[in-house]
Amino acid sequence: MAEPVVVLVGGWEHECCGPTVEIGDVVEYGAVSADGARRFDEVRHDTVPNQRIRGRVVELFAVGREGRVAIERVPSGSAMCGNDEHDDGHLEARWTGQPVEVEWDGETAFEVVVDPFGKPNRQ
Image (cartoon, rainbow, N blue to C red; front, side):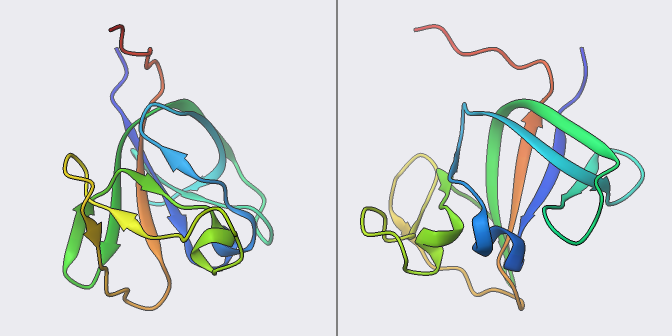
């Protein structure tokens, strides 16, 4: 069984046109290696991806000055910029749903943990 990989998303590329991402979603990212192993940077516009990362989202983290915070979802870029009338773009803590404030170190940054062979949980 393959181990999960981490895809780093955020910044201006996510704010431009990034989708909402929730735990359990099946995602596909164009990416480049961030560390030569299991971490990748999502790319959308200025860089040609050399990897396709596809799988099920198993964890999400907002990465700020104080470190990583487990979250329920990554809001879409338009919601984060205040341009979505149906989504205010706020972050919620994993498990509690409480609002989370993240002090960014420059641009927004999220870690999307993807299981390349993930399957939906059965209830």
